[in-house]
Image 1 (cartoon, rainbow, N blue to C red):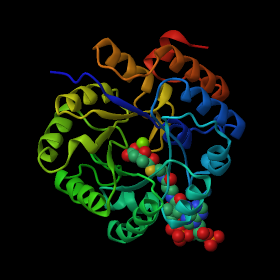
Image 2: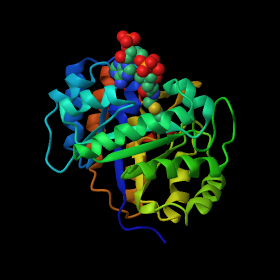
Image 3: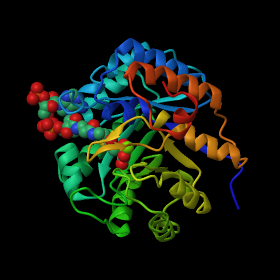
Image 4: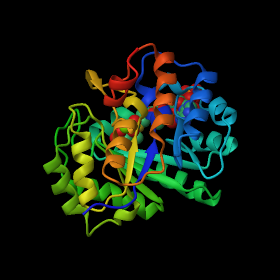
Amino acid sequence: KWPDKVTVKEVGPRDGLQNEKVSIATEDKIEWINQLSEAGYDYIEISSFVHPKWIPQLKDAREVAEGITRKEGITYAALVPNMKGLEVALETNVDEVSVFMSASESHNKNNINKTIEETYPVLEEVVKEAKANNKPVRGYVSTVFGCPYEGAIPPSQVLEVSNRLFDMGIDELSLGDTIGVADPKQVDDTLHYLKDKLDFSKVAMHFHNTKGMALANVLVSLQHDISLFDGSLGGLGGCPYAKGASGNLATDDLVHMLDSMGIQTGIHQEKLLEAAGYIQAKLGKNLPSHHMQVNHRT
Ligand code: HMG
Ligand code: MG
């Protein structure tokens, strides 16, 4: 049995571009996000208010947030790692902020320079302040299905981090297969374990397609009543831990699969491909999604 409707959230301008070597001009990012706004999404993650030394590709987060044309009904969101990031995010008046941490200790340390225990109070303060400013908060958990340094991560550890984030007051959780190692059985086992312990109406899956298993993992998630999925248009964004590997699940491939199955997303495939063609030309390389390979190879 399949759901009638699924929400697909676009993270390409953030998760895609942060992992691309070519930097895109600020005005081109703005134009691209404006094109995405016409494609039927209700959520677009536009950038990150992180340290520019860590993610130089997104150092223009403020200019992007202030430059885009905001369309009614769309949530324009951005990542914030700490209060410094939140401060700027609030100045730009993004609609929603996302906090993030890892289920594995070593990835957390490598990504945000803190232990898991040290991260909780930082995020707690951010969530509290964001809510005081009427901003919904999304919480990302990375390395849910495997860590580049530690290997497999026990689901109990994912649950612990997820519970801590929900206790802080996040509105939605996104579970990330950061390095694209999940297989459908592992997703099935993990979601079985989490099912009675988390509210799945507030849980999104964030798959990476490093080894080509992202859509299979979506199918398994659909059977567990997950109805929120993250995608990056064209499969934009590599994987810093796997040279040459494609990154996030491609939104265009995901929307095509869901459309074919009669599951509504509200997203227009033609407009998606146009927007993907735009950013592909700016990057000067073919995007890895199946749709772009078939339809828009340059
Ligand atoms: P840190 O060096 O430990 O920070 O970095 P600090 O608090 O010690 O401060 C050091 C300096 O950074 C200070 O400046 C701060 O002002 C400045 P100085 O006094 O030396 O001149 N600073 C900042 N500047 C700009 N914006 C800020 C900020 N905060 C402090 N927000 C920090 C800690 C978290 C900032 C750093 O590690 C960082 O920026 N990390 C970013 C990591 C990142 O963006 N990773 C990718 C996103 S996560 C992801 O992709 C996974 C996901 O997609 C899900 C999945 O796929 O699984 C979400
Ligand atoms: Mg990601």
